Image 1 (cartoon, rainbow, N blue to C red):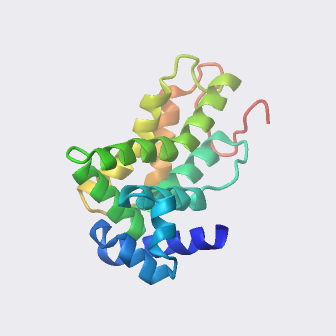
Image 2: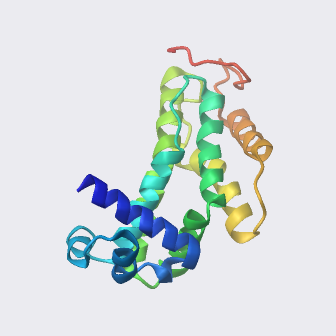
Length: 196
């Protein structure tokens, strides 16, 4: 099933990039991937589940290995989001989810699971930094994630502007200045966690 799954999800990503979420149907995915509709329905009973798995896979593909350097790891994670926002399939999916979630329970559930998947990397990095003393012990992790990801999502999905790497770096630096532990000071280039 691994090869069939990959073929199906690749087809979903292609259809998203070309036509948006309305182009993703079991019929279209079957035709594009060569996977039978019965198999597709068995593993993905609705379109939202197809889109979910395709985008979660994409999120995993843009993640990089942790280095132990708080600033570098946050920049890497934020650059992964930046690449997703510039990827036609991912960008169109995010726009569709925002549009349909208030009216479609399947897309509302998709929005929630995509948020959890997309924020998991940030959460792991920030929680580790809080434990190591690099960030203040009372750091609101959810708010810090919003402060990191929010500007990029707003800039790309609502304003329609491109996002440069320097912009992502500036966001990380501003968030670290807000939440750095008074003992460790604001993390800077080359700063490594105490437990690394």
